Image 1 (tube, rainbow, N blue to C red):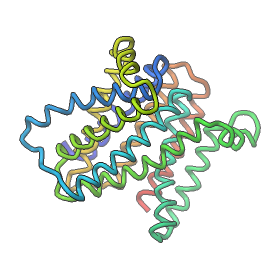
Image 2 (image 1 turned 180 degrees about the vertical axis):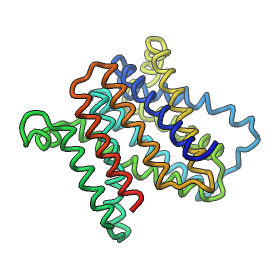
Image 3 (image 1 turned 120 degrees about the vertical axis):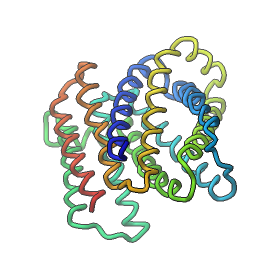
Length: 290
């Protein structure tokens, strides 16, 4: 299968993940959900050991994978906490802000120049965000973004998402295969979530309660995420793959989630939010393609 079809297939799985995850989070707290979910994803990843493709990783590469896993845990934690308290049709379009944050980081820390296309992309993303949050008055988008702590959590998560996306490509270009990277990452992420649950929350008590009360509704988004995430890494690892196109294709999941999730969950202003998401996706394309 070609890399662009893999990227599109990944987008479908990620969209289904967000929708089913939203349903699960109506019953469970983010931390407990993520810990149990990470265990499930790790279990489904273990058959990779039977492929004979798992490499021994040590030294700097192991440290790089661990660092990427820490960033991923931060991104997942913040965005999941936001998703639990936000409408999915508002949550998904705002994830399109992560390439904008990556561009800002590149400009300030790497000295990169912003092209005319990227400037237009910034305008479109900002415009899409304004349309997304617009309700009654011209000031309402600014007031909501300023005052809503869950939007703040999502934006913080989006910053970490942008960094993890960049590291994925760096790691997979350093003579390490998808199977190895994926499995090591899942081990690190699961261990980190367990530490968080035991240190900040009630540890095994939370894990047992979620497993007993909501195992099936946690299982579904976990399996969908595991499949979608692995397919994404397969696309990124292909030599002919264009990362500049993979990311926009994958981000069509945000539009799918906005439209499908908004309608199925009976959320308000779904058409307006979908339009905002389309505008923001165009901005993402311009920023990434330069």
